[in-house]
Length: 127
Image (tube, rainbow, N blue to C red; front, side):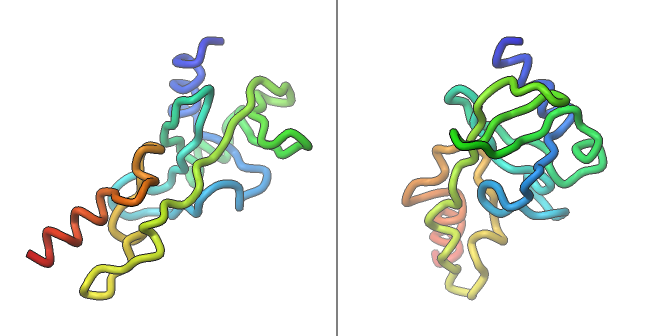
């Protein structure tokens, strides 16, 4: 299966995490890409449903082995998979005391640098 087709499958069916603490913390409900986690397949980072009923029944799952995280379709290992780390700005708060992680979830690995959407939001609010 090519990468784009696999990404479409994961975004449609979701992903079961055998170890729920894999990757950066996710959240259930709310605005934005909730119920999802960022995953990286062959250099492409996408948001995939994790905390949904569909994901609970998905034929796709992630398991850890000695080499890292491995994506499985049913019981067959099909590809290495990784999870971006929590962005640095998540440890910060706005001037009003709101944690950045409550404002925005990064949708791609490029948001994990020193500045992200939440930083811009905070700067705009400060005027």
